Amino acid sequence: MGMVNLNRDVFCLLGLPLDVMTMQQTVAEVRRAVQTRQRLFLTTPNLNFLIASQSDQAFRQTVIDSDLCIADGMPLVWMSRMLGVPVPERVTGSGLFQNLWESAPPAGVAPIKVYFFGGLPGAAQTASNRLNERPGGLVCVGFETPGFGSVQDMSDQGVLDRINASDADFLIVAIGTKKGQMWIQRNRGDLKTPVISYLGAVVNFAAGTVNRAPLWVQRTGLEWLWRIKEEPTLWKRYWDDATALSSLFARQVWPLSRLVSKQRQVVQAAHADVQNSIDEQGCRLKVIGSIPDVIPDQVRSAMVSVYQQAGHVTLDLSQCIMIGPRFAGLLLLWTNALEEKYRTFKAVGLSPEVQRQCQWNGVDLLHSRQRAPSN
Image (cartoon, rainbow, N blue to C red):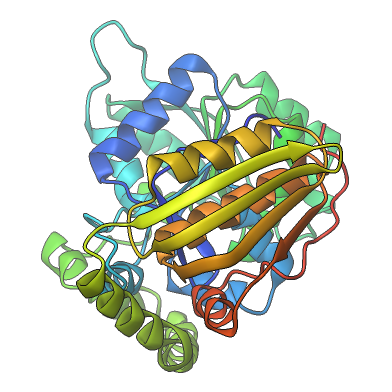
């Protein structure tokens, strides 16, 4: 899987890790990954991702395993700000694509080579033609329309070989949300493309078969109405997602936001310390105090140090008072990284209050999963 970045400015929203990023920063990350040929599994969670992840652990795991998760959806931005995390803006996958397309590459740098995988019959070819007819920051080097088969059917070695042979920098997958994420999860280890992302609507936008909402509609959070106008069949998905969100908001987001607000009034800055010990039984990390917002450097450094060690890990929260969204996000990445290294992990000393905070954040520290060693 590669090296895990535990220095990301990430927070947890209902069990999903989200990075605090601007569009400009995201564009820079994509360009950096292309230039360095470093893996970047980019995920763009929106409200549909958030709702689907509540009942589908395998799908949620694809988001947790991503290298960068940007908030593509105004409801996610609004809830994040309620929780005290200053997400600067909504960063949509289609907006990222358009930004990369319309902006000229830096001097001396070639355009980013794109490969489209998915879309309705003819859409990917039309998108490819349009991309290559108009000079810009992107050029299409291949496309494939795999149809509506299973993830396994679409993972034929010949498919992977064709993508690799294209020498693409950016693989855009558009075969349905869950199927797209699961396809990337299954095949990214065999793909040479540095940047891979499920961007379902991008092929249609690039082909011109679906029009993007005007900027004022996007900024006011009403893009869902525009999308329904363009694709009327989406109304049921939006209705179901909004209904499910209302329940999650009342049970988890609202009580957590009240707690975060109260703690930030009492503790203006994170007031926490950490004790790290290593013996023949493994590592023991004890977190002391309250972390309602920004994570203290000593806490993050201790968690990185434990990750770099070997053996069993015990997380002692017996003197931890508050787990805010940012600390919950780091815990989500940290425990996942330990499991990827096949490290055994146990959390102890969780008070009923801290257990409730974990539940509100969507983090389960009491049931560590068993995962096979990664290559």
